[in-house]
Image (cartoon, rainbow, N blue to C red; front, side, top):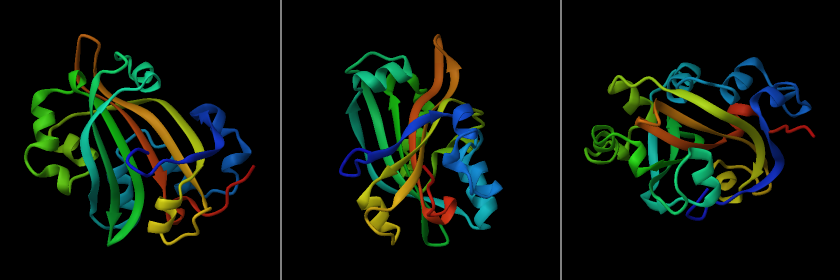
Amino acid sequence: MAKGYSYVLLKEWLGAEEARCSPLIEGLLPHQKLLLFSEGSMTLELELLTRSRVEAEVRFTGEALLTGEEASCLGAAPGGKATEREVWLTAGGRKLLYARTLIPVDMIEPKLYQALYGNGKAESEPLGRVLAENGILFGKERLEIGVVKCPPVSLELGAAPETPLFARRYVLFNGNEERWTIKAAVAEIFSPELTGLTVRS
């Protein structure tokens, strides 16, 4: 994550199909696997799991320039402008998931950009809810699962700094190369409350 929440990758990123067959996820309960491999709205799934309304506690919003890796992932030009948003998804006052979203400015419709950043929504609404409220369906591609060490995230979750945490990254999209409603690179770090403390080798 940017802005001070950088992580160290402890277990290499695995594509979704490879991860499903990996010892990495052995011991996880069905609902924990569901969250890791979710192709739908994380906001909705967390609300169903916790029976609480999910809110976004925004840690940072601003502009960024796409790195070569980020640009390649999104099919954009290196050095291109993007909007960056880092949030905690919370429910019932508990921090459950840390997420960073990176959206090239030419890969989001102006109306959706306004809904995310121009109406105060960015202060409390998760991306999934904003998309749903605007009637925008989306797909996910290039889903990868990994394990990271991120002391600032662990500490805010009340865990030891060296705690291994499950993470994932993917591309969220609606549209195509001729016209994107949205195309975003998303990275998420899960609380042990969601995916447990045990990470297998």
